[in-house]
Length: 198
Image (cartoon, rainbow, N blue to C red):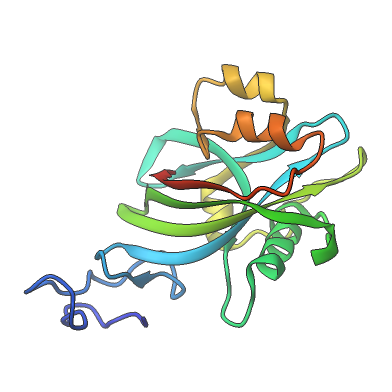
């Protein structure tokens, strides 16, 4: 489905009388889904170092500056990309780490994330991969977009035990368990986390 101009009726099958929301600050890849939420497909990566630690990004919403959360590296799938290619691109853009599709395991997890961002409730259907990096992986913010510079605060490696003790939100909520499961190697089973917050 393509984005509708603000104030225009949504296609047949949408609730009677509903119109598309006003123009979004999220970007053109976010379209209005059948449920009325801004929607896109996404690819994320559980990046693991040799010690089994996962690289996470801490971000905040400019509309809720007092709230922040940790999440896996990744983002939207561009037109013409598959999930694996998007995952590799997002890792390079967000961290400076260069991977190939052959470096990815999975997708190991699928989920539908519902979250608030830029004062909108959004939904992103995600495929999550695992990739393993060496101990000297240097991190850079050089590939961050203007939105990322505005909303991302830091990157940090976390052990599963540290994730259990963190005091702010972590997405997906099951991440510590997933890190423990995947650190020794992926068992080939794709976990479906269903729909969840963040």
